[in-house]
Length: 169
Image (tube, rainbow, N blue to C red; front, side, top):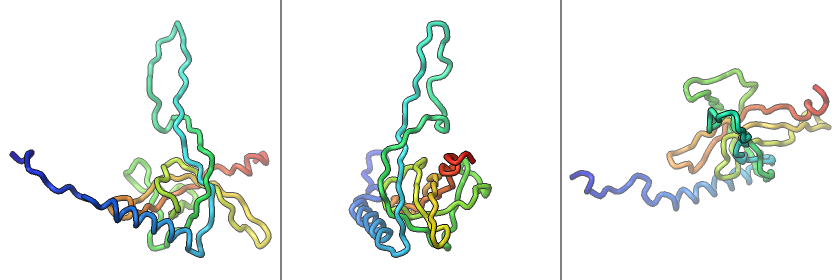
């Protein structure tokens, strides 16, 4: 009897307002005087190539998600804003406990919808009065503000130092 009762679903017709809030979130990031620009590389999942062999049977068909080969789409320019200090970055491992062994994780607001985990941000920051340095940060996770992903704060951790790698370090 209860399966025949029509109920109004949660978040019914909320998408109209959520879309406005998402767009306002991006506008607020882009127009903030403290925002800066970064290149955003989003991952593209690559299908693993399995070699054909007449003498060996394939023992597995699917790679663990942490072992999948990734390629990245061409970068797009996005505006980025540091998150206020009152909401410290929360970086979780396996969803169970906080991890503090990352070197200076950050929480950022990124001026783009649907930034997937695994994306990489690249930007320049002022090192001294006369020099800048390139930084690469990996998008580790995202925390939705509200219940319908109208706004997301992204937790990022440092990536490999590609400049140092090119210098033989």
